[in-house]
Length: 272
Length: 317
Image (cartoon, rainbow over the protein chains, first blue to last red):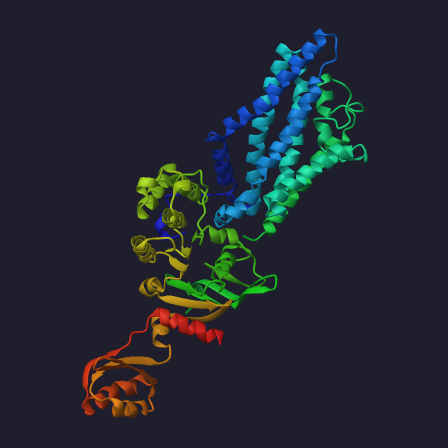
């Protein structure tokens, strides 16, 4: 640094791959939480998840009055909180790295004393926290009270529900990590969104043809592609029933680690 | 010059993109405290060179040192001591100019916040963005973005400032301001910059390198470049019958050619000479002894644009 700096500043002390991470996290955090973005997302997901769940609870109550079987409320949470959120993640995350690479802001930031690993980690961490908070945690907590106060299901075990929310969160994180990785493998937003979407439908529709797919996909964490044969892990935790298999949980965690590792490795080799 | 006196020193720096060789074995030496202009036509390899120096792309072969640090191994440490203005300046659209500068500053400093705020304000004032400091960047014109780009490049008191087309998108006043800022900064930093505005280069730079098709064609001081570019041209305006004098002068061994033009009763010659000393001694004497009326006699000043075009054309042959 030149003599003009006069030493009155405290220099950034981060070393190694963490160089620049603090400021990158702060910048991403500000983009989410020091703007209207976070509460707009909360409103959106409350409308999608909680309003739909209210309709399900009402439909279930009506069916029960008529002596009929209503919609499976907890299963439907897997659809709204799992499938819908996964699609939301694909749409939201597709521009995170690709958009920055194409607009030139990534090159600008990387011309500062930051590591590429810190860049990827900052995007992963803040977007994950924001997405999980707005689309899983807030709607989930509100749903817990809605079920307890207004549904025939009543008050679920808080620990069971917490475990279920963890499953939904992990499922959501899987798609966040996958889309982030795709953003390092392709320059095209279309490819970044199309591949995870195709994978989702392969997991969903392909289970009938290749049953083993259920063990390597994250879907069973939130909703079951074959509800007559097995319950989602989240439903099992909420109802206290035995878990069908732990393999989907293990494979989801393993794939998340792989996606992040590939994303970091690939981003470190890219040219801007 | 000692090797430590060079802020930038590259050795055989090369970069290929597939089959295209964008940079061919570049050996560049940028002295300390210089304003170093890096020139070349579009696609010559200027931005590629800058990106290699910043670690945004990796060389195919060769390497280099910036501020004594290796461009491959110490990329992050190098970036901690430089300021960079990209060619096409892009910032986060939701941030204001002030937030952009603060965000940039915090890649270098963690505090004290009051000092960071002070520095941000200084930069805003320096580039004349006081009235727009708290508006989101998305509403900024090209010139305002460029000014913000210059401010963010300087916010960390860099030892080396790398500017890719700093005067692009600026109006004449903005251009003048940028040149002033560059002149001021040279007291404590080296400036390495690319530009197409050769007038500016001639005005503020002291060293120039010209690249063409990925190769370094020349590197010299402005004075050397302007002095050592082939023939010197004298402009002579005459009255009277000049035919015999034309032949006489054209036959002199130190004359390489005369371009003649007629306007009314005046004849204008552009006399290109190989040996300026001989021309100084003899040309005026020959004209006076011929009895012609000489209304103008001047040495045509070389400008960098002529030199640049000559060098590029020669390098393409």
